[in-house]
Image: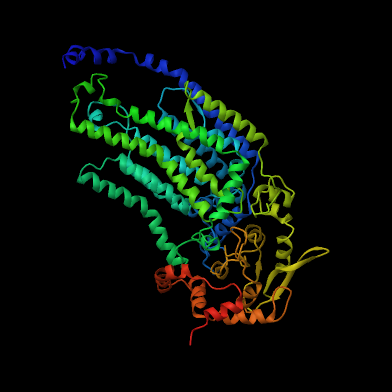
Length: 631
C-alpha cells in the first residue's frame, strides 16, 4: 500500500506526458509490415480465384430461380410448382439484387462471389490480428491453407453460395473479436477512448447464418454462446439482455422457417430430402473426408496450427486480466481483491476463451455433420466452410521466437501443396466424388465456362432442349437408355393436352438455363422434383445422387399414355398413374401445385413435419401397393 501511495501520483503524470506521435511511431513499423503481409495474401488469393473463375452447373440453378422471381412466378424452379431447389436463401436474395442491375447475371454472380471470398480472407486475417494483439508484426498462417488448396480457388467463384459462406463466417467472427476487446465499464468511466461496439449487430449477423446455409446453424450457435458469455449476465437485467440477444439470433431463421413450411410445405429445402441429410452414412463420409485430407496432406497444417491455437488462447487468457495491474494510475484506484474486479476478470477470461474457440467448435461440428451424412459428390466442397471456420483463430500469427518454426513449416507445406497436390482422378473417382470444375471444363472444352451459352456445348442437354422446343405438342424429353452413332438419344413421350412440356436430366443448371421458363425442367434425384425427393434411396447409390425416379412417374404425372417406350414400359406407367392417386401422394402434389390460398398455406404449415418424413418406394408397382388405402 505504501509503495502504491509513493509512486501513484508520478505514474499517470509520466503516461500523460508521453507524446502521442512518439507512441504512434513506435508502432508504425510493425503495423506497416503487417499491412503489407496481409495485403499480399489477399491479392494472391484474388489472383488465384480469378485464374480459376467459372460458374458451375449448380450455380445456374440459382439463376433460374431468380429468373422465375423476376417473371412473377415466385421463388420456384418450375412454373406452378413450389419446390425449394436453392439451399442458400441469402445467396438467392443477393443474386436477385444483382439481376436488377444492367449486367449479365452469370458474370455478376461470378464477380460478387469472388469478391466475397477475397473479402472474407481479409476480414479473417484482421480478426486474428486483433485477437493476437495490436502493435505486433503479424503474418498469414492459417491463411496459407486457404491459399494452397485448389478447392478454395475453384469455389471462390462457381456461382454458388460458398463465397457468401466464407464472408459470413469471417464477418461474424470479426464482430465477436471486436466485441471481446471492449474495455470494462470501470475504464469507460475513467475516460477510455476505445469504442466497445454493440452486441445487437453481432446477434443479428449470427442469426443470418442458417439463411446462408442451414448447416451453418451450428457455427451460429457456437457464436451465440460466445456472445452470451461476453455480455456477462451477472444480474437480472443482464439475463434479460441475453434473452433479447438470443431472440434476435433465432428470429431470421424462425421467420423464414414459417414461410418455408407454409409456402413449400416442408421443414427443409428439397435438396435436404434429395440428399437425405438426416440419414447417417459414416463410412461414405469418412471416405469423403479422407479424399480431401489425404490429397492435401492436411494433417501437417492441422498439427502445426492446433499447437499455435492453444498457444494463442493461453496467451490471450493470460492478458485478459491486465487491467487489474497497477498501470496508468487507473488500476491503482481499484481494490486489489474487490469482488467486482474479480468477477469482471473471470467473465472477461471466459469471454476471451469463448470467442477464440467458438469458430473451432462450430467448424468441427460442421465437419462431423458432413461426415455423418456421407459427404458430397463434389470434391472437398462441403468441407471448405468447416475448414475455414476452424482456421479463423490462427489465420494470422505474430512473428515471435515460438512461432517462427510453425510459420516456416506452413510456408513449405503451402508451396508444395499449391504447386503439386491435386486429386488423383480425372473427372469422377471410382467412389463417385467429382473434381467438379475439372469435369465441366473438360466436358465443355472451355477453361472458364460462365454463361448459359457456354453450356450449350454440353453433349447431352442442348440436344434435348432443341427437341422440346421443336415439338408442336406437349412432350417430356427423357434420355434414352443407350446412345446412337450420332450421340445421345432422347425419347419424346407425348403428354396430355395442356400439360407443360418437360425435360428430365440430372444437370438441372444447364437444363434450366437452356430451356424456357415455361418448360418443366426436373431431375430424377429430387432436387427439383417433389416425387423423386420423397422416394427411397437406391442402395449403394452415389452420394448426393442416390435417388433415381423411374421415367414412368414423369410420363404418368404429365398425363402420358401407358405405352411402351425406350424410357418406360406401359405397365410401369399405368402403375405410376394409379400410385399418383394414393392419398398421401395426392396431398404431397397439392402442397406444391395447388393455388396458394391462406387455407393452403395453413395446411402446408401444419402438415410440414409429416410431409417431410414421407417416403414411398421408387418402383411404381411397389409404391402403388404401399400407398394404396388399406381396406
